[in-house]
Amino acid sequence: MKKGIKKVVFKYSKDSDTKGFKMASLDSFLTENNSTYRQVKYQYHQIDFFAILILTEGKVEHTVDFKTVHLKAGDSLIITKDQIHAFDTKSNYKGNLLVFSEEFLHKHITQSTLSKIPFLYNHNQKHLIFNNPENNKTLIDLLLSGISNNVNVKSNQIGALLSYFLLNLVSEESSDLITQNRYQEYFMNFKQLVEQDYQHRRNAKDYAITLNISYKHLNEVCKHMVNKTAKALIDDYVVLQAKRLLVISPHSVKEIAYKLGFGEPTNFRKYFIKHTGYSPNEFLKKMNLVSH
Image: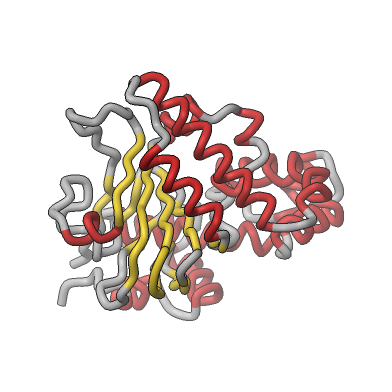
């Protein structure tokens, strides 16, 4: 029988004066019986909010969307809405965890700023790891000491600090981001189309026609943005959604195959093996989500 993983939703504390935002040291978060993460923080779970994991000491292996990332002191990892992750039980590390809801993000960070940090919604292509200890320290110090006691002012100040922090990550991410802006609109439109239609079409040429650009140009855009072909990005997204459904959905592999748009479960199985190296059932066993 298949076991599922839990989805963790953002819970607002009655005593919290900043709706949609929380910050805690990793020590307190990982040792206390946190109401939001009770009994699941060391297990795979999906989040419906955004999180920033900031390391100040030590090293850790953190699992995000079924892949292990290696973090060291000075690193920050952004875990975005709907990603699946689990905290490591073995590593010795310290730092801070910031969590904020999508509602908080859009209410307190301007659209012009969000347009400059598209990686918040482009997490399917790579893990969002940055190394900027000074930027991390500035954010934490200001959050701890430089915030107004006025509720409304406090939320706006936190939004401004997050904007400053995330924009600094953009400047660190690549010296070629100015050039990337020329491709940004096409890329984001392509990504949005894939997310809407991946169950029905997986041919990159079809998407190029919809975008009114050539297949060659679509590949050029994708390679420039994330160093992958358009077809590779489609396959990556389909496989990620397949993995998520396998670990979250109570449905059988056969039902999931149909939900993903595969006419025959055997076609889904072949596709999954081709892109992961193992079958859907082997994946579930690997994730320890099949009871024996």
